[in-house]
Image 1: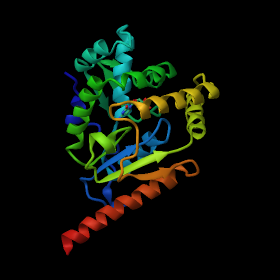
Image 2 (image 1 turned 90 degrees about the vertical axis):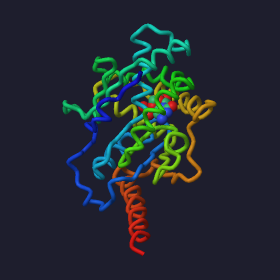
Image 3 (image 1 turned 45 degrees about the vertical axis):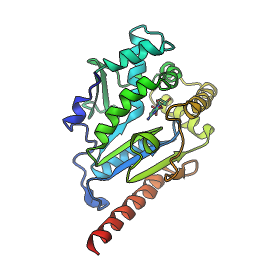
Image 4 (image 1 turned 90 degrees about the horizontal axis):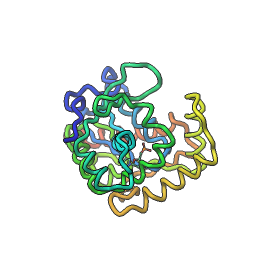
Length: 260
Ligand code: DC
């Protein structure tokens, strides 16, 4: 069984103290943010959830947690059956962070604290492979849908608007060129004092794009009704402004319908 007990207990409400008055929105929208690696989904998703007082779920962390567990158990990540079986029995916890070291959330896998390990470049190279496995996707998608059904959630990933919550109130697809995304990832690593090689990161980004968008199950693509935002030349604040305007539009529309 795969559990996210702290979600059901509601403890991972990023910025739970944030008020909704800033943007004046209802508490129950479901917001899907998809896009390729390093397109800014996590940063934007986390900040948006904080501003709205919504739950924030980075589904990439779930695929990373499964990959970490496989590597830690010495399971060959190319062994689909073994990885899938292990994923079914894994207890992944994603919680509000207790430490102030720049993390958006804390992740534990079967009790082991793994938050930063999930970001290691070695893991990047395996996670696209693991996320191709239909059995792994099934286990994680079920969990994600259960969380989304509670509403008031910002969920980020690759297939949120297309597969996980196709009826989301707002679907955003964040895009950026591979070079800009690789540069962002490079700077992130340097800032954390980790080793970083731009050319290697760029080739990883391009490789992951290819695997993520060409897989048979839930490939990376914008939903037909998603709003595509190119973040190449936009700051984080500018992207947030665009999305908040869209959220306000939805809220105003539903208030108008309710009133008239
Ligand atoms: O967003 P990220 O880089 O942390 O995602 C890690 C991997 O997980 C990425 O290679 C694609 C996969 N993923 C996915 O297939 N579906 C999701 N909803 C989220 C992530």
